[in-house]
Image 1 (cartoon, rainbow, N blue to C red):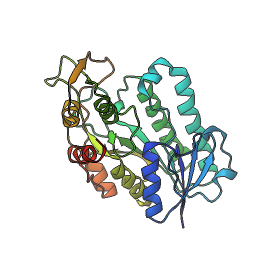
Image 2: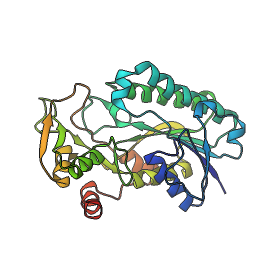
Image 3: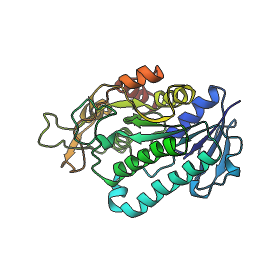
Image 4: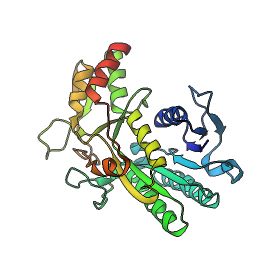
Length: 296
């Protein structure tokens, strides 16, 4: 039975990735500085910072999914040195250990934010245009993965994730924030799009977390991945943030646009279909309507 190391194992995406892996017959070791709120009995957990991992910790590991990361864009803007040291430091440590231990494949989830002001739909071969430290950090890590694949022969794959949603999503995600405001009987606050846009708010390419988990598994199993390639993981469809807020319901207020926000995020997903034989299954509006019925 193959064993997968999942860093950041107490996080939102990691929970669903671990669930998928267990259900698919993998053994899993989760690593995080925080203990999981809802641990799986079939999963082993190690409470440890990735930077402190040793070669012995990777004994018996076949694959790595590297989810440990400070993902808060605002924090990266306010604390670029600290977040750069953290995000790049733990990744280089993990890459070094993985190459020494002959890991069969390492998967890194990157961000759609680095496409910046490129024309949509965004394709993997476009020149990156990161607009804040977080996206630049992810881009730097992408280059590290490509270099480790060529220099150290460590099979790596980069999955660029778009607007993630799903059960147990982080409190700072848009949908979770809107639902919390609804429960507290407060107006839902939206960020206005730029003056260039015809829409009041930005439009996003929403992707369900369990569909992402399936993409992780397919990437591990694929013979077509492991060369440092980049693959978009998204729906390939645009839904405005305002439409999401209206689905949640209630009063809506608008805040001024932010200079680092890009109005529209839309992926070209043809590469994921071709290489992974993967397509998304869950649409955001029907999922949200069902979720609200059960939780409001």
